[in-house]
Length: 248
Image 1 (cartoon, rainbow, N blue to C red):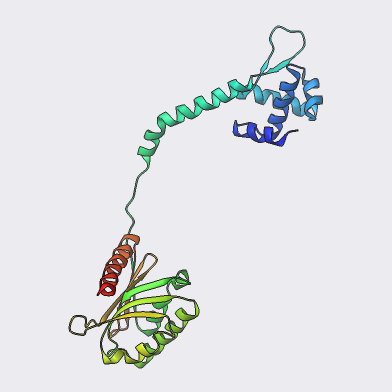
Image 2: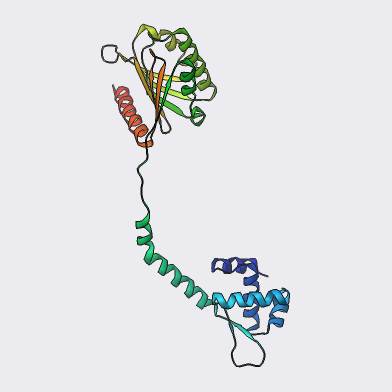
């Protein structure tokens, strides 16, 4: 049995056994269930069932006014025409079907973390999605970071480097960040250092994937906002500034 023909008949809605019986009918032109069974290689009881299914699908017909039950195939071009007609009918109702679809605006999910333990948990929230990619952000001065918080951040920086996560950042020109600048290359950070008189933030904002993180070092607090459009906006603002700085 030609598998390509069976595959093609499958696209017309006939399963494998139905395809076998239909092809047997085409070869015979017409025939009894017994003859069709012999031609298709299927058992006679199975052939009877399949013939009835083909009649229901409009792929076979029972020849009327004969003493013996004989079957004939519906011409292939008729099957194809009927399939095309069904597609046309579905296309006609496609606008109505699409109108039923409701487009719900993406919701904003906000998570709040406070305390050293929660801060560390927030740093690693969904960070595995960023492996081999980049985080971009505006980072704050570090004069209000406790030694314990600094240690958590150093551990996090090492994790990013191990997972090939690149950080592109804007940072203020502040003495509290001198040690960070010494390890920029090691931890895959690419920085633009901004004059302190135009950028003196004590709040960090960065983004990756659909996440925006807002970090308040002094209170060991972090807010995570999950929203694709918000993250996209922050990233675009960052990239506009980054390009502008590179052109200078």
